[in-house]
Image (cartoon, rainbow, N blue to C red; front, side, top):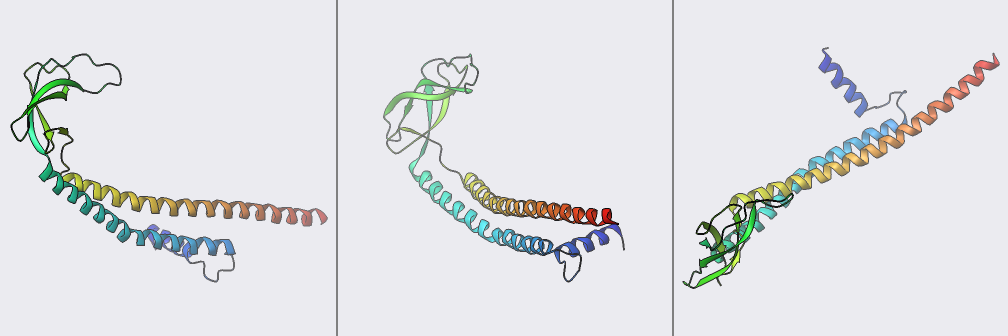
Length: 195
């Protein structure tokens, strides 16, 4: 039997101690706990996929509403954007600009422009139905990314909790085994000193 067969056999014996006289109750408990937690992690896959799918569907509804309620426009800068950037500042800065609303009204306000942009630069912006600046609409790619991210996060959370439970139980059992080992050695030492 090759090395991988040996490892597989050892793993199977660890997972299923059976009636081995050398296996302790803690070994059986740990093996059963591992199987239960592994099943929970596997059962979490469809649950995580369902949660991710629901998130995707919700974000797609927002994307559809945004597509109807948000309009692309172009703002023209009325001033130069500052060039210098301090520590911790963003690459963009608010600059006074002018744009036209969907009904043709001209509005002015501050838009985010890259540092160093000059007067007259054209900046793409998004407007709501009233012509106010708003955030860009949710895209289908962003909705898909959110759905996948949430699904993976849910699965990782379940897997992490299961791993933490297994590690905690393993740690407790390991300390109990060491304590039993120390008691057994102390008993053997007393018997050896008598002879």
